[in-house]
Image (cartoon, rainbow, N blue to C red):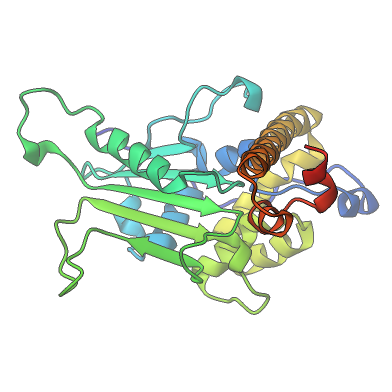
Length: 288
């Protein structure tokens, strides 16, 4: 597998805006374009290497020769994106890692995660090849919405025996990182990286960068949104895409509630029960 020249942390890009302007501008790594710009480009591989190291609790040497299979290059606008998964990575060992940034918890998210994992697991596997050619596949979801299955910031799922907790192989591994559960006093290396991703506060990222050379390098990339109009346009396009998606999701939920209320009224459920089930007001239900 081809090796790539190691990138060294550099000083942040000089910000061309004045101090007051900086304080009024808000950018976050949660933005689809910003996330891929930091973690999805081979030239910024040191950021991805460090992040994977703290998430998977492995030495950085394990990620020296990783290849990003779907790097973000050239002009990019969110409404033109073709891929499904944000970032697909392969290690020199053949192990596959998929990473996605999600700002919405959608219905059937669990099944969606299984589907994406299965697609990656079978990717490149050809008919007639021995099963031993299949490699471990890790799926990492960074969530800016409540992960409802646990109160933990970092949840790890594998296939285990529920009686003695023995593993049934090691090929399936899910990681869920819940940004909504971060607290002000969080101080582990992983929690600092999640704070770096979660915040839209320039000063917080700047402070984190003072403690970590790779975060300082990442800040240099984020600062391009302050200094480059072209970069801001790409960021804003991704922002609009997320807003439109969230609006459609909310509209779908509201439509579903109204239809449920109609069905319940048709079956003569009382008003109080319909309110409890749908969350609609009495006025909304009576108008149906």
